Image (cartoon, rainbow, N blue to C red; front, side, top):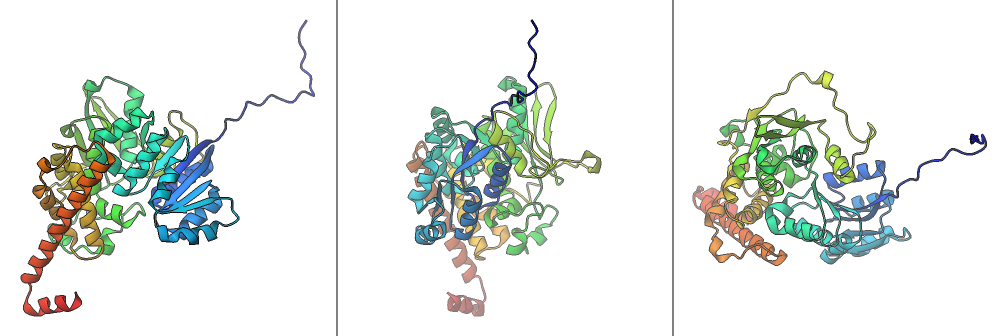
Length: 426
């Protein structure tokens, strides 16, 4: 007998998957905020948020996302943070140990968006408890290298890059799943930054405000300066070489001002696969947070590229005479310690530029001068956090010595009245 459907029986709805738990390290930065926008629109719940010292920004994010724990790396801000979160049910912490505690909290995914070498220890802490690492911190791979990636693998913490260029290459390689020796070249695209077409003379007159004004993104001061000097792209070359296990000569940089094509892979048969999309950092974050699956997003969450409005796509080689930073990064890959020294020197020198102690055109030459002075024979292999940080401190010391020498040299070459004024200011 045929089974008849009872009209009064409610339709069966498929079970709703539980939300994916996520921690965001570096929540108040541009990447962290973009990730939290994605988290709001997807099936996620926030476990922990941490930031450096933006108390008001972190509190506002806590009120919106309701994490279990919030931390600031500035220990002096503990009581203000506790007062601001009083009655919310959100636990508060401050200081380096609190940031590590936030990284230690169990979550299925961790957005690693703390900038600089400061992000290495918390990201490593998260990896050791097993989590999907949505990696937006280049320094973890640049300084941590093979040891960092091996540690992630040992603890079953997959690394999914969140930078648009590396995420594009990651998606292409994963989709194709071809043998490694069929990959002939990886191509990273670069916007060119704000100074792409400036002459040498014009570059010598660049101001701090100009260097911090990226044409397409609002970012922190340090990453904006790195983008302007192309040091950001230099670090990306090192990151790509290690993430995708490629020789540096197989990694190209091409200037693409429209920032529509984010990365390309050239195969041994001559085929070129490119990933294109709107210039929106939420796109790679949406992919990384949902990986290994894909999920549809609303147009409010991630932009859609309107190909009918694309009238021009241009590509051109990078002028390495005016922007030598990527070549310096390629040279550094000949040693396991050199990328750590390069990154440390750049952080020191960029900080000096942000404090207006040096000119923009001094940044890369001072990093190069530091690289030329370092002695690998006195350094151990970077196969632990302690050793990586020791090499980092060594690089910082060398860079600071170069800054002191440069300051003394500039002072001695100045006219007497200028020297006197400098001494009075000091």
